[in-house]
Image 1 (spheres, rainbow, N blue to C red):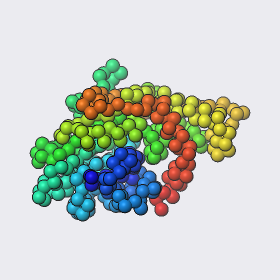
Image 2: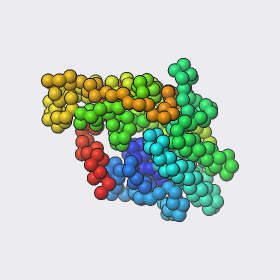
Image 3: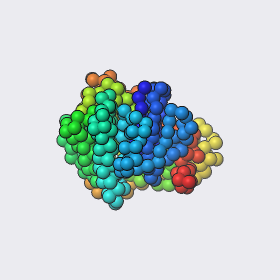
Image 4: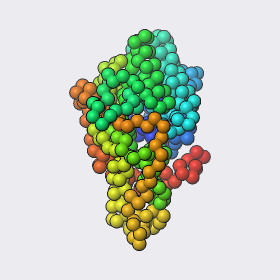
Length: 361
């Protein structure tokens, strides 16, 4: 039985991981730590808050005394670090929070882990797993090989730079102090529980409310898309079987341009309205609800000025995790996006509470 501390556990990927980990490892105890900033939503964990194997703590990863007390009180042997400021646009307009959370916060966790696992009598079978991003590698041209674990870090946004710094700190604590660590760098995640500021939920909810679908520049930026359950499974493989001190890239083998991503989303929503007449009643402001006009969701696509420093292409070479640990994504983009659309349509109260702010109460 493991005693697991998950940081950022009320966020999109963290909450999905908590549910996934318990389903796969039902005897483990999970302690969840989240500051419940704007993207942290305790409702993501509502079904398990009273379970005896789970405890939720509202707190900040920069609080060294709190983190140290949790490691000691719960005799944590595995720390899985999701907590991060992660929205690139916000990092451009307000980078300070990214430096504080992503760099100082990660270092605080590492200090506490070192003290508890190495300096305080020793916990030999410990692991600090750090969840990072492919954005630390910078950008690729159309014909460049995909990012591998040996690709030099070349971040182009304050967000990516802060995550690159945190990656280096995790590596340093392994090589300098002997802390058992692993790091995973993932591509663009999508799926249930994603905060509506990100591209897919933003566009999906805009379709339902008849608002423009903003596409940066010409929409030809390329991303590799990873369904969140595939990401969780990849992390589990790294934690259980990955080499200590190593980094593993986790990708979805799904490279799509942004405009093609949004176009596919529009087609899927169009098909849902065509098959289910109740959607027109539920979402009357959507063009899909009005057969008297061009009722394709694509009519909402709007091209806007590109953001500063927008990376052209991300692509993940996941051959290390595939060859060493047997990882392969189970969802392609079509199947994963279908699941995502259906989840949002079936969980209107969840995203309504975010849009009206009531999830914070």
